[in-house]
Image (cartoon, rainbow, N blue to C red; front, side, top):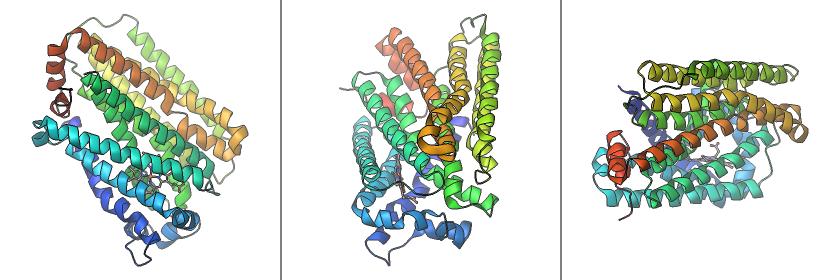
Length: 393
Ligand code: HEM
């Protein structure tokens, strides 16, 4: 199975699998007899105490969700519907029906926008979670909602300009952000199973930090794998020095973040540093390095430059996280200041590098002419044909 097909299968399983849990989540706040699928699943997958006990979302949040149940109902149902609908856009059959693609796309944007507006309404109206990592997580949700809306706006602006490369890239990033909802639940349940003593809220904070790297990384990898990489052209002579430089920057950033972590109290588990940041970022750096080396060995200069640009983004993610811990600590305190760094500090350089790659790829396709552009987009596979149908006509 190719990486692209595997990625697509993961997206469909997450979006469709999470649908019944998210769609029904808020019903309990209107009718106490309504199903509580997510809580029941967490109880059976980990333990009743993990799902309902001290430090669980139920114990910390049920009353706030009940007080704002209208807003939560809109957020959870529109979000669940939006994600399920997004999977239709990958269907090979619908790819040949541009009209359907456009209407599904418009409905997705409306649902996604509604869900994010409700998320903002909840964040404004409800108090922050008064528990481990609560204020850091709140900050991450503000940033995530903004990034999700911004990526959708960029995708919409691009398709209105007929720029299909940027459209596909930004909508891919948007779906990666939306998928943080099911992925976070998978991660907190996984951590709960691995460490029986961990509270749900602590597992949530570790998972939210992991996704601060994994979500933009997934959007970036989806772009790299979808762009045409076959053209040969010279690789810049200093490329190998840049690989070494990027690795050094990443290592120095890791040391800095570890120094920031060292004085934290024991209540902050080592997983916050390792699982929450260092392992995912190192994995991403190594994948990008391997992609750059492979492209360089095949004399594919354009493709190599894309992998190298993102390698710099990934390498700068850790220093950026460490710097954010420094800036956030006076505002959020030692523990939440550190967690704010890992939750929101890493994504900036990755998304910036992603934007540079998108701009270069769209520019080179644009230069090749409109006819060539549609051909190139069509050639890159899975989503290509689908989006080729979204140009204005
Ligand atoms: C990606 C952008 C998203 C943002 C910024 C966001 C924001 C929020 C916020 C602010 C809350 C309340 C958290 C708290 O207790 O403080 C929440 C909870 C929730 N959200 Fe989202 N959300 C997003 C995506 C989604 C999607 C796509 C779905 C459904 C597929 C979803 C389903 C839920 C559910 C079910 C809850 C209840 C909490 C729980 O699961 O235990 N969210 N979200």
